[in-house]
Length: 528
Image (cartoon, helix red, strand yellow):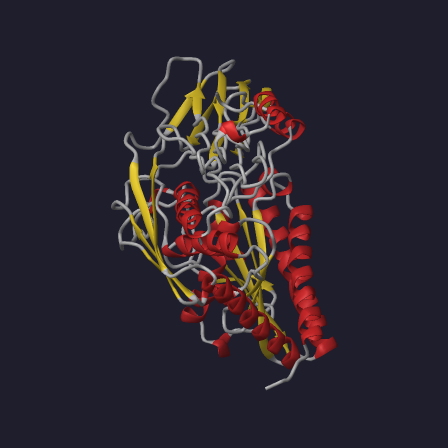
């Protein structure tokens, strides 16, 4: 075994982190669609030759669910001896493709050094294309791609690419974004090969192993500091895609330096609101890391002390052929459940509930020349108040981390006008420290189009902690008296669409707030 000193391990680890961040910037800067170049709905990562994550850029936590599945699927389908330098695998299927929903297209390329695979360069990007489709089962949600070669020994497999593009509504965007993903992965390949040239592949591989061991030690130390016991929390999950709220719960068992998370959940539904197991794992790894020690390195080592179970065939651990397009919605509630339970395990260390949803609006239609356009926006909301500070307003929380599409980009590329974009007064939970405020976006339709919308917290509210108040939930108003917002909605020219997202819960009783804080709370839009 190669002996490494701590300084060299840290230098190599920092280089790996720098590589994935550089890959992410290359992907964003060279992409074509607004969803990637403006909203940054993409992620990059490096995996070792065994398929364990070395590091992931600080992009979208949910995308870890795509990464931790695809290498295993590739190696199950393709013998290592049959893989060559320049091979690039593409996949997106939630069951056999490594992704967590079909719009997330994953590209994985082996990194060779001295004729051996030393690592994998991986990225995923959300291709905002699969609009105007049903969600009763996964066959309605778009083309399903198992891990197949998009490039073979550096040569593009045009037949594979053609099949993919033929099933897309905006193929020009898809082709350009795929090329951006390719450039990001190739950059990762070159940078890791340069790292191996400088330090030697054995030292780089040994450093990767040491960094995973270090993440495991930090996670175990954080868990061991919590008293042994079972910590429980329950919450409701609602969506405009069904009429009643669902009860979800978690029991977290701390035993020494290990943690078991056992979820209860209702059966999977005929709507795109189910999670495959890798999506559940990604949600758990993010939330536990956040609650235990945010400085733990984001690699495979942090998962070793954790075990995760949920009923097979449930909304949190669905089976084929369940639809999964909106899996981000229940994943937000999974994060809420874990943090709610950890608030008992680590009192005074956990923030109140954030907005608890990822409100997504997908507009689609045709331009005057007949070309199809698709515009996706996920709208942030309030963050939960913290034990020592107010919550942040107008942000994405937990499992998603995208930016908004600037007004200029929206109105230049799509027949929509944004009339208002503002924080929602009264949406934040009151407390010694107030929650963050939600967002309101008001659109005017300039050309008849269609809309698919997904949101949560319509029937429930983000909760406060230690006497803090709950926040305001979601609100939808289409100006036509509509109360059913399920499925594909036809919009007419001139129609006004108003979407308001939840705030964050408050922390501590409002009476504990000093007089200046009360004025601050009211001025910043906390609910009464």
